[in-house]
Image 1 (cartoon, one colour):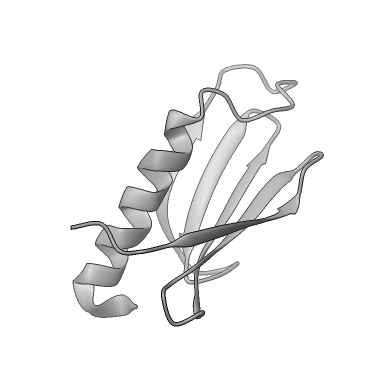
Image 2: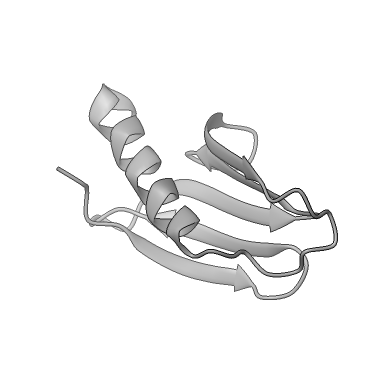
Length: 85
C-alpha cells in the first residue's frame, strides 16, 4: 500500500524540484529534474537513490510525462516500508 505523501514544489524552473513529506510532516524524499535527468533520493539530498529516469534530451526543461512523479511516489513509499521512514 502506498504511503500518504505530500509533494511541495520547491522550484518550478531548472531544476524542477520537489520535497516529499509523510503524514507526520517528516521529509522523506527529494525529487529533482534537470538536464533531462530525474532523480529521487530518500530521505533528502545525499540520501539513497530510489528512482531515476533519463529523458534522452538534456535540454528538456519540464518533467514529462508526469507518470514519473507517480513512479517516484511509489519508490518513496517502498523505501519507507523497508523500515527507513
